[in-house]
Amino acid sequence: MSRIAQTFARLKAEGKTAFMPFVTMGFPELDTTAELVPALAEAGADLFELGVPFSDPIAEGPTIQKSSFRALENGVTIEKCFEMARQIRRKTDAPILFMGYFNPVFAYGVEKYVAECAANGIDGLIIPDLPPEEAAELLAACRRAGLDLVSMVAPTSTDERIRAAVANASGFIYCVSLAGVTGARSALPEYLPEFLGRVRAQTDLPLVLGFGISKPEHVAQVRGLVDGAIVGSALVDVLANAPAEKRVERAVSFVRELLNENPK
Image 1 (cartoon, helix red, strand yellow):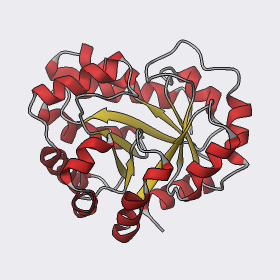
Image 2 (cartoon, one colour):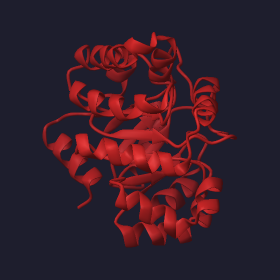
Image 3 (cartoon, one colour):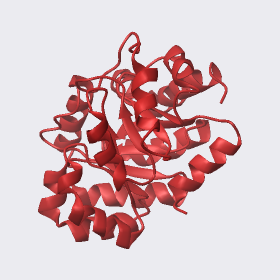
């Protein structure tokens, strides 16, 4: 059983919902990521989605796009992402997933990329622009290396599309809460229970909800509907707006606020 599967099984047995922060690697500075992730794990985060910076992050809203561009300006490369992951893994056993677009993976070499992920303590991959019908090579490489390959589904996905997405997925299913790009929202959509019910009907894998979750009340709203919640843009905003010497402290306070108002 993978580290991701073990984490969800443990949390389910405890009646808890997983909390997964999204962090852009190398934002705001190169050193921040390796310090931030272990600190958030101590604050109560269960898993981590680490964004590999890319020049054309099509699924991202302005907040995460800006963080990706800033990280690239800071000199972040795939090799530096592996190095950061290695540093993080020395400090925490929490599952780590790389979220990145397929172009850099393809350019690096699919087999080599997956092997390096496994060697540096990465537990799974999320590739938002890779449809399931084009994922055979990556899927095979992940299975050989023992990595989970997470599929994404959206409210606009047909039942047939959901079936195709979950067929070969492992770890969990990333459920996009709304059509469009990432970003903090004032409220979550009313159709979530119906959408999540359609996904549940197709898979026994844990469901994790992302896009638009930014407030304690959002976390409370999704508890019971899904097995985990991802907070991205709101956390990136906290990092962007904090003084350099206070960034990790402010991010930890933000996560604790989300979780303390919503005991797992």
